[in-house]
Amino acid sequence: MIELLVGLALLSLLASLGLPAYTHLLRELRSDSEAQLLLGLLQLARAEALQRNRNVLLCKASGSACSSSGGWEQGLLMFVDANGNSRYDAADVLLRAEQPLSRRSQINGNGALASRISLNSLGRCSVAGTLTILPLGADGERRAIVLSTTRSPRSCQPDRVPSDCP
Image (cartoon, rainbow, N blue to C red):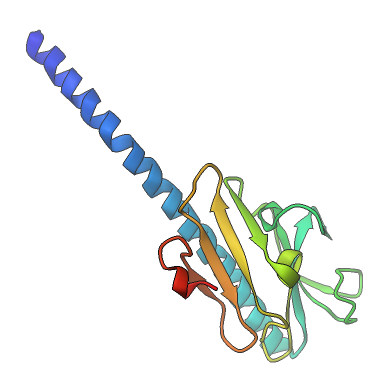
């Protein structure tokens, strides 16, 4: 009986030591997964812009409309901007609606990427910027998606390799 109690005590001690590392690992995996989802959506938008030879926009969305408030985690719309007004309306072709992107992270864009991303008919972003993914309650586990007017979007880790993330 005493051996069983000692064994249980050792098991609970080891579990309490390993739990923080496991939590950190889960947050890192979640950040990586969300970064890969965003990269995939950006690559899909680029492919659609090239295939259709039209501008494709992604906007952060609340329901079925573009939104200027909140973060990208609430969802997004991807559409062909048929009339060139940079808004989703009846003339546009909806390609994808993602609702929500994340419930466990904040996803924010800087500057012009705060509410929309535009890819021209050559598949290039109209402006450069960064989308930052921050898991709720976690510092040091950010991921960033860097968009350039001349290169493909890429993922980086600003807390680990700051020189790689502008």
